[in-house]
Image (tube, rainbow, N blue to C red; front, side):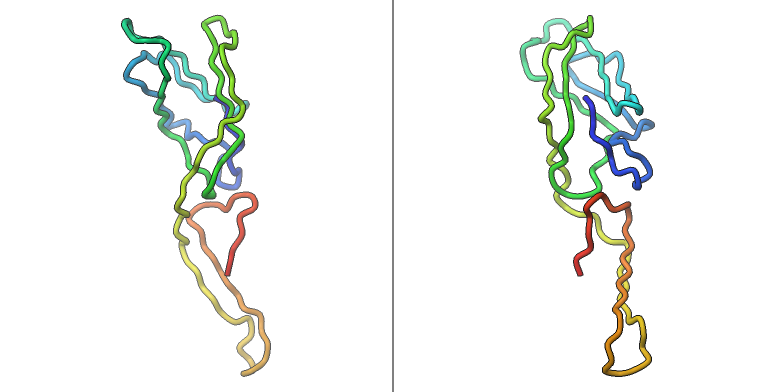
Length: 143
């Protein structure tokens, strides 16, 4: 699986925390689960346990995946299946992730006037917003 770029201002441009990465499935033996940072590619090598039907859908659980920095659908994932000789068995470049639906709470919000010198005069209003995580591309504040 190749992942799109995560938001680099969040401390990393990877969707996986390599120190927490893990792959699991009860019906197969996973011999390798690695993430290559230069290509943002997750590779999983596995084989089915004997007696397991190989024509059924495969569900893998991946630990260490980071939710996107904004709610909504995240596109740009590619999933491919290769045989033991690295020949393509199937590929899908139209994979999207229905991401988190609930935004992160703000760390703090303060509102104040730029100038308090004169009553009834126009002044700039300052709004300070502190976030728990970095803001993603095209994020905005709505006041």
